Length: 194
Image (cartoon, rainbow, N blue to C red; front, side, top):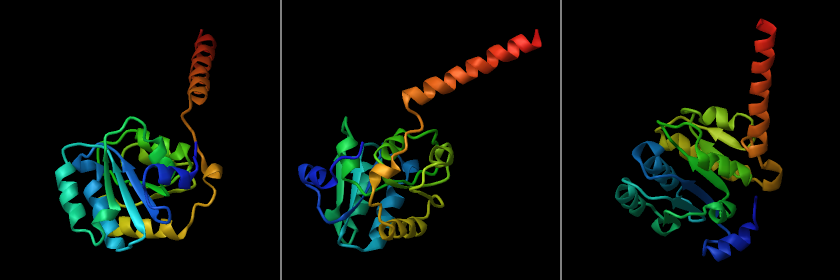
């Protein structure tokens, strides 16, 4: 559920007037954190912030890369946290530039559930996950230049009504109904064959 963005930013000590990009993922090479930091650096925009939620083997590399930014203080490493929802509510855009090993990323489902703009890559189950989501952009994997262009495009296309964008394709109710449909078809097919 979208929260009050300004209230969340105040509680989390994040800049009120910045455009905030974020990612929530284990820091593994194939999740694309380094591409995201490079893309953020290409923006060269003092009024942008990047939130990195998670921990993992790429943490030190990502921190080194963040230090090369024109605005290193605008890249915030949050670490592992149990509840990412307050951070999602504070963001303007969720970015997941993965280039391998993706099924259905839970973080994308969470980002859709609060109506965030999303930038990701056409890898694994990501295109299918985002297929009916109007606020999603897919960009070529492993290209910080194209990712930066997508980020710039998202900044120019303001997402004023996150409530309107909420998309929850995998709620328990929906999964329950689709499971029942599978059983209904199986039962009908069985009796038609006999």
